[in-house]
Image (tube, rainbow, N blue to C red):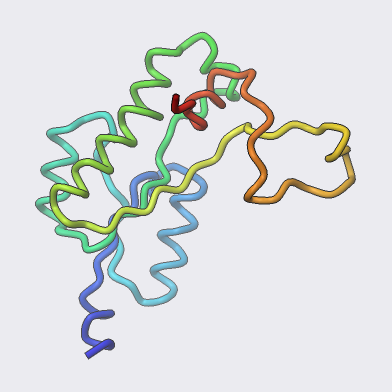
Length: 149
């Protein structure tokens, strides 16, 4: 029965067409013989997301899409509205649509959330997952580490 349920899994990957992490996820899942589709819709487009979710009918959604800016994250400093629309509102929209449909949703993210300090010098020990972020000086970082009052 476990084998049957595993074969029924269907993955939809947002960020799987152009994003580095998403492309890696799609390739990894394909190599494992999984049924996987790279999402075509933009994460800030509710109607396109709804249509794609209803058409593909995934059991699992892997969300790695986001806006990092071109040529680098400094772009986000001058394009805050678009950065918020994609990185915050778009991610919440995906999570909400998955929740409404009972689709398992895993959100992957990157961010500039750490900077070297006295306890973590260049070439020294790295940061651990449970250590709080110590860098929020860029707008991009602020969209990745929301401050909850």
